Amino acid sequence: MQCSTASPCAVPPALTVKPRLARLLLLILLLLLLVLGCGYAGYHLSERSGIRDLAEGGERQLELNARAVESEITKYTYLPSLLELEYSVGRLLQTPTTYRRGLVNDYLEGLNQRSGSLAIYVLDRSGRVLATSNWRTPSSYLGEDLSFRAYFQDAIEGKPGRFYGIGSTTGEPGYYLAHGLKSGERIIGVAVVKVRLDSLEQRWQRARLQAYVSDENGIIILSSNPSRRLKAVHPLGPNTRERLARSLQYHWWALEELQPLARRTLGDGLEQVSFAADQDGEADAGPITYLAQTRPLNDTPWHLTLLTPLQEQRRAALSHAMLAAVACALLIFLGLALNQRRKVIATRLAAREALEQANNELERKIAERTADLQASNQRLQAEVRERQQAETTLRQAQDELVQAGKLAVIGQMSTSIAHELNQPLAALRTLSGNTVRFLQRGALDVASSNLQTIGELVDRMGKITASLRAFARRSGDQGEASLEQAVDAALLLLQNHPGYAAVQLHRDYAHGPADVRLAIEQTRLEQILVNLIANALEAMSEQAERQLWLTGHDDGERYRLSVRDNGPGIAADVREHLFEPFFTTKPGEKGLGLGLTLSASLAAAAAGSLTVQHPDSGGTAFELNLAKVSAHQETPRHD
Ligand code: ADP
Image: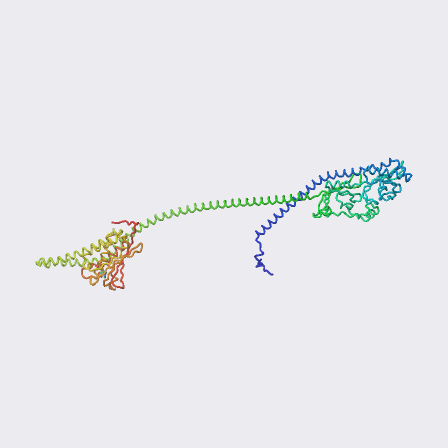
């Protein structure tokens, strides 16, 4: 697989181990190893101290048994030397005769019985048996040449003969103690006592003691376990083997080597050895390990070895190992729990600290925000004050403007007014002059008629000025009007109008039981409605069927009232002049041409509007748009 450096090889997901998991596994492995290590250390420490204790105990045991073996051996050392005192023995050695031999045989037989030894016999200087305690038995040594025996060779040289061996005649193992018998300074023969030492073995077996005694050749001569008997504790060289075979010390025994399964030297005379169980007669068990303690036996070239089984100690060491492992596991568990607890506490502390920090931060932000809010509140309050100030200023300016607008309209109208007033004034001047002349002439009828005309002209001029005064009046732009009341008042005023009786009125403006309240002074609304309804009635004067609709539209904050008739409508060329002052299509003195102008001005003064529509269905519709006064709103009155 080739991988570029730019794009590293993708590892299959199944093969990737998260570092955290790997760390955890490693930790578990380490802890397991630690537990095992504790167990191992516990085992070793326990084993070492157990071995030490066993060795101390074994040392005492070894000493006791060594003393027992030594006393068993030395018990007979005096016996062969005793024969030197026996007169018949000396005589036999010096001059052997059958009679003397018989005497000595009897003597030895009796001595042997009393001492409990195996055999007692006397050899001449050539090593031949002259007399023996077992002279009666078929396996008697009598006449046998035992000069090859080491004990004879030692004793004939005047040294004490000590020898363990198997009898060449009887094949019976025994301990031979030999003593050179002297006559004066000269050794004339050798006395030998053969004793059995197997009572030691039986004693060990009864005491369930594992022990053996090895001789100067390293051959086990005494053993609590018979299978170890006559085995070599260390390897024998071929020369040694040959020498031993020649000496017949161990008869024809093969002298196999005692082969422990394992051997470990622990100290001076201290070893750890394992033997197969079958050697101990326990076929079902595995190898058995012993603590072997060896000590030389005094006055002999032999060694006593004590074997102490280590099973109990092994079991104890295993228990201690398990205890150590469990204690270690518990300590680890405790450590982990403490660590976890420390972590939890640290996390809690960190969380608390973070919470405190967050809290402090929050409090700081709240303080900042509060300060900001206070500042912006103050700014807003200042702005509100400024706005109120500006609104007041604006309202004043608006009032001024409205007033100025009115004055401007009056200014605009002044020419028309002058024209309108000049005409009746000229007529008045002419009529008054004529009337004077007619009065001088006595034409009272004509004068009367003229005066009547003058009166009408004055009325008309009065109407014009009254309208203008009402229009120019400053106060009353603001106020509150009831639509219901205004309509009723307007209709009441128009009751005597010629067209009123024949008209069919459709009132569709009051929505629900609540009255519609509009932001305009009551009388002004009535004035507008009178103008609009009067115009409609006049427009329909020629109609056979007269319909008048008063329709309201509630737009929420504003209200639109439509005054529609089914009259002839307004000619196109007339439409653009409708709201001009003094524009009228009404003949003669019927119209002033101020109704719509004034109505529109009054609506505008109340922040409203008056517009005209020409429905396709015919007739004319005037729409008055005014602000509504809600229930909670209070409109200041300017009267
Ligand atoms: P005046 O009523 O004195 O003539 P207005 O200003 O009220 O003055 O009306 C101006 C003109 O507008 C009227 O002369 C009339 O020709 C026309 N007019 C007003 N209302 C209607 C209407 N409903 N139908 C037809 N024409 C109308």
